[in-house]
Length: 246
View 1 (cartoon, one colour):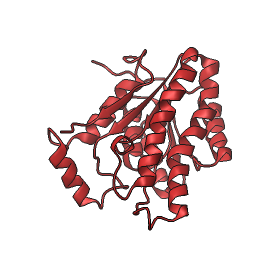
View 2: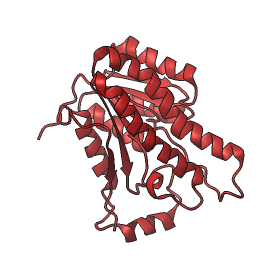
View 3: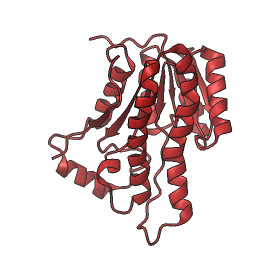
View 4: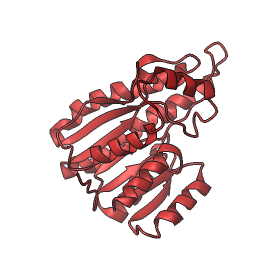
């Protein structure tokens, strides 16, 4: 089965590193028109852009803080100026700042909620404008299994991802009349910049998995590629667990 993403404009928030950069690379290899978004990771974004632009001229990078509506409007305007449309928005930007609740500061709580949940709201509110005009679009929100089952020491993160799931289900009902699909993905344990130090959590994930977790990242990338393609057209309001839990 061939996945054809040529001519599709795909915006990925938080895509200078981690899962976001892997998605961007995969889209670029499939000849999509891609928008790299970054905030603080300028060096990583520049390195990624310089690598991809060598074989994909339809690539731009835009610095934007997803918690700022002004920045999101900048990301939107530069995308439309370059490509004239948006086929897929992937809300991938996210952070962790863990602590037990009695030790958690208000800043820790607010920052995680702002990036992981409010950032999704601002991006969807802005980019859905052009999708409504087009009468077509796909929004994919990267949530987490922790938004379903919780995690000790991560009340802020778990709450933010649970919020993303609820937001996704509600927005799908709003935007369906405009032929816009809205879905969420909850990946299994994947080693990223967010969790690379959590060896115990990786061991727990390995114990809970029915099969090896070695290829979790590949599975996630391939699943998102499929969702972005015309192979999936009439699926919306769903939460996909890309995982194998006991």
